[in-house]
View 1 (cartoon, rainbow, N blue to C red):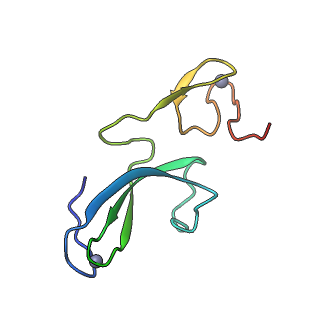
View 2: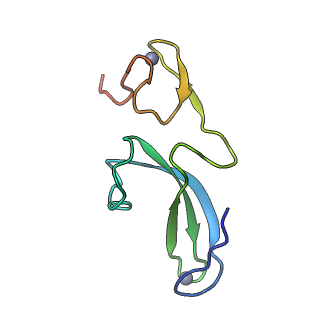
Length: 99
Ligand SMILES: [Zn+2]
Ligand SMILES: [Zn+2]
């Protein structure tokens, strides 16, 4: 967690939660970020208790502090990999493809 003061109020912002932003759906939040890999970006959300302003901080792509990324198992080839791959890195199985 970081120590951040609200730019407007100067009071410490409170850590709200760690989440993932899915590219392609919520691009309006981080529209100016360069196109990182497709998929989800891990972010930390802080909120100002006074003016309720939200701040998003990207954690380093693919590196989540404290807890490791959850893993998932490819249903096609059985490889275990970080869950935020949109496709299996081994066999290219596409998790988002409509069945
Ligand atoms: Zn504020
Ligand atoms: Zn696979």
